[in-house]
Length: 137
Image: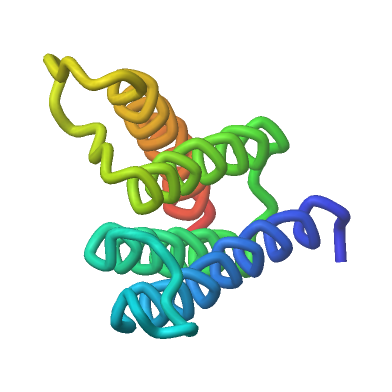
């Protein structure tokens, strides 16, 4: 197995592990605030983080399981996953959704930039992998 294949698998597994941890966080965030099991966070934003992480991990795995994409695609995917999942995590922890261009709250523009850059990076990397997959047929 080439080292890049192993790296793609590690990226997919890391995204899925983030998704599993976020599901646990969501369960704890839904506990009553007086409960010793309560963990602060916005439950719906945490659920979005979990879903996004699982879908990213599954997409990475499905697109790269039998092809060897270029290294720049791996770097772009890892950067995109880190930025987009980091933005989702920050959103879940702080309540800053990062979806409005004009938002006066501090930090909102950073979350929005992370979401946009991360999403674009993932989209470019996935498009490159998908086109390589289609050319291979």
